[in-house]
Length: 438
Image 1 (tube, rainbow, N blue to C red):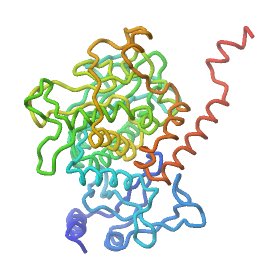
Image 2 (image 1 turned 30 degrees about the vertical axis):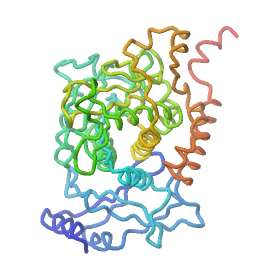
Image 3 (image 1 turned 60 degrees about the vertical axis):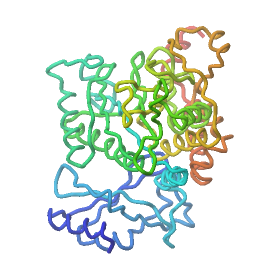
């Protein structure tokens, strides 16, 4: 048994853990789990646990369905209730090789590309979500707004309990607050390396929903559940660090403290934004959020403090090396974090490696510009629908390289089916608008 596995085994015995959940992600970022007793843990750590891959969305065909989940000992954590722990797993073929349809493996490959270039990716997402009275309708718990303190606030109490649970599981939280829309909340996770953060995001979504459920409340990461209100985004702060621990984005002599690496990374995200957005905003509903007027990015621009742009360079602590980072504002919290981080990283590295030129920052409110002015300045738009986003993704060599052929093809196939089901459905808007007059 490896040192990491030995430590897990000792911790389980010391804490009296009776059950261990083995977690992994399907293609779309849905959390999957198989639960074993503590007595089966040693074998699971050494050999893995077999499962039927054909029953997991986006995995194997029925004629090649045998697979293994192998726990990553570094992910061991005790859940906040009962004597149950969890380990996050990698998916493997029966011969022990990594499974090409495993989203965690796609991110690992992206991180290996970064390492070969001398970098480690760090990420710190702002996770927004809603609390509703039930799963059946978006009935809010409050009428609060951004940073509001509105006692008694039922949602804030549930949110605090969630933060304590995250901290107890080893996931540091930097800040938390009420967001712009009624009953909308945000939890900001403290930055970590991208693989750890993707694991932490899966855990965060699970805890937010489960703790809400235990209070008789429904929590949702649906990007736009309420018409006329802000949707939920996942502004992703990110930076590259050199392998010796220095921030590769920092340049003390630059007026914006941005190094050539940072500028190339931003340029890469901008050039490939239309291709990767279908992974970072992967649902039909995601594009109800990405519309003008609700603070979500629509135009492919960057700036320092300007929140109308797609990429922002925060200036809370100007000149501080470790705080130098960029904020990509297009993703939403319902994405598969492993795949989203993978395509973001590949896009940024492409800009660094190929020396993409960074266009000038746009420090004005982009939404206040007219179409002609935006066109004159060369400002492009993000896709306006899932259909458009997948069409852009489908012709992208970069996304295909980032995801691998298996995930790339299965993901597009799934999204095409989702779009076809959506466009064939008659929606309430159409009935209200047309039924009486046509």
